[in-house]
Image 1 (cartoon, rainbow, N blue to C red):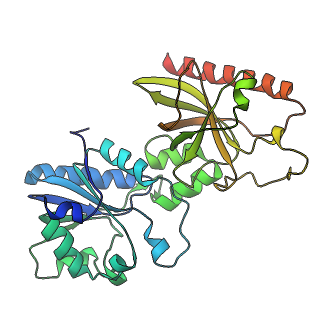
Image 2 (image 1 turned 90 degrees about the vertical axis):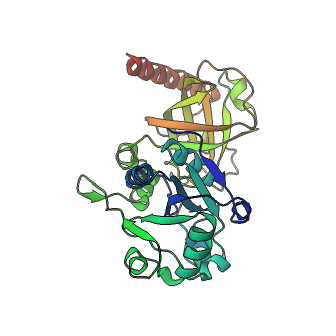
Image 3 (image 1 turned 135 degrees about the vertical axis):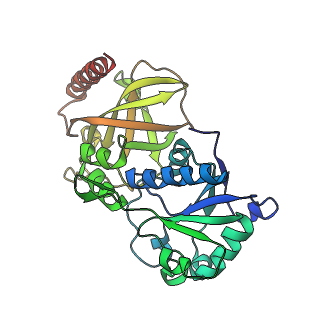
Length: 325
């Protein structure tokens, strides 16, 4: 990774200090999957060839929300996307609010006000199916045909095992719990990203204190217990992540039958971090998933649940010991 990425969270922030020169690309980049990474690699190469800084223009919310379509389950929150883009070596990211006003901008206005005026960009790289501006007019073909001082290149679609890589393919795999398939298209393991919040403290009472996570994204694997790794203060810890509703602790008035698929409105994500002690409240964590241990299920007693958690922890420790050899 190159020097730390600079994040510009509005056009007004660039009004007083526009960039001197840049090469740019535009997109939501949900998941920052292998296709995105291939595009960003080409962006970096182009930037080095021209001796210009690289810029990713992205959006705070998914455009489908504003355009009146049902938005997809989000793989990555904005903050997670920024973290992943930085890991890809991007120099700058410009975050725009995709609202009704921006949706009404023509491709010409976007080029003039964003690319030329604020980013000093005369070199634009688009994904194979990317477009911007009202009515998605700003395709690579349309832009290249205009009499502007703007060089436009288009990245090629990336295929893995004969299938085109896309956020929708990754999203479907994550929601179904197909972690190996999702990892193949992401180029890295599936991860959960969120902030540690206060829970009911029940884990401490049975000897397994957990960090309750408020996920910043809505796409997560189905209910179950998963192997995970967490980076804390420069050290990697093994962990168990439970996704679901803790059915052992549901009272008789609550429904016992429910869909196994993740529902961000009512499901919980809690994590036992092995060999860690300390206060994590308010910290943002990324839990990298490495496989599923078992389904979530109701136990007849807390003692039976505790015995199962002991077995789960041993499974996790054995897995990480083998991994470290």
